[in-house]
Image (cartoon, rainbow, N blue to C red):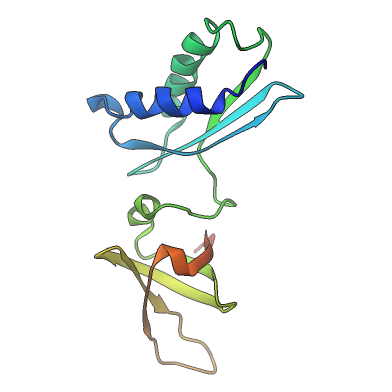
Length: 157
């Protein structure tokens, strides 16, 4: 790629996500590898993201990128959801995970296993998980800036 495509994609998607049909979607991240002409776009939605959402956004972006003379003709574009292995980075990602278990790495070094309850005035509200040592639960209120990493724990039950 002759120039960074990242600002172009961010601009295109900010406009697209203002459209009524796409308001439920939002951009998480854009990563590029200029050596291999690889562009990865992570999107999410207020109720999750479906394969069809990714496909439509990919086609939308391809239409602009294919016409841009500053971008080399051969590139690989991947549009996907962040997936369960990627930490949540935005407040807007949390509501769809109400009552799910999280592993939090806090900025102060603490590691917490908690259940997400709600967002109140920009604060994330969690409940600690009872353990064999401590049967009592505790409500924890924190801000996103106090969390180093927030991972949704996979539950198979």
